[in-house]
Image (cartoon, rainbow, N blue to C red):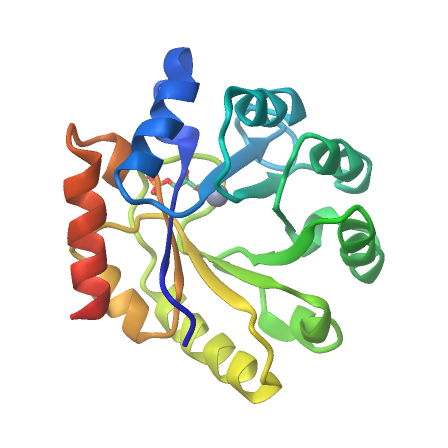
Length: 221
Ligand code: DX5
Ligand code: ZN
């Protein structure tokens, strides 16, 4: 198993002080920046785009930026995010007309492709593309908002994907997103996740380092 990655979702950060917030979570021991992109079309909310990603890079953020696209159509925004400094770019199969082509586009843009599964999206989308992915993201809430409760069926999905990844022998990250907190992260890690997105659980607390520490302890425990 690859070392655990904690990826705070800046959706729950203070957007008026975004650069300082990202510096603070990285100083607190987080590994990646999870960057939620919503378009008020594929999901019912509107957030941030390539300009903000680029601004974080210009601010001096060196950590991997994990772009989670919740937009439709998806292809035309990919080169912009690559130019803006994205590391991973993940998308929802329902938002792409040609999933294989979108994955290739992310790769050709110099980024690492990820595929995202909503709570009711079946895993068969992996059948022909798993070998091209660097990340698989299991949603444990319906996308659109931070602060929702973890949907338990995501655990069984994680177990199934973990098996498929292990069988492939490739170093594909297995990421979980939605309702993750120190109280449930141990169980989530046991189900096979190695990459943990958390928004409200981290940014909702005054001491980010304490939350990150509690999360790592629960993952290792
Ligand atoms: C939901 C987003 C998540 C969200 C997680 O659509 O993809 O990244 O910010 O927030 P929490 O951790 O509060 O559930
Ligand atoms: Zn997300």
